[in-house]
Image (cartoon, rainbow, N blue to C red; front, side, top):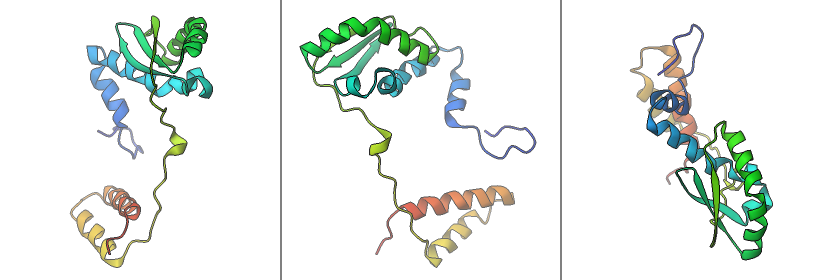
Length: 161
């Protein structure tokens, strides 16, 4: 849950909880492997990422779907460099080999393509509902933070007319 240090006000991030929970267990390695998909575009660059995307990882072998034979040929020369950069970014030697295969790579998901929801003003009824929801919480700081969280969530949802 939350760190017990004096003055610490926020809960421990879920990613940190999961990392600590699975440290030293087989599932810890799987979390590192999943990271490959998150860092791929950054490691290979935008141009390559539009032509090649990871599709599978098993036993140290990263399968990458590549759009065409010329791109496969080019990436074949870059496999060692990409492997080194991936492992450096991962902080572990997870990727031992890259296997290239022809296909249609899925379009990379980019943070900048996500649309940030518009904020709206809460109605008096919505504010009253938030206040009633948090009223039972004993700790005033927790009550305030939870109310802010609820208000932000409601402000992002369209008003029901």
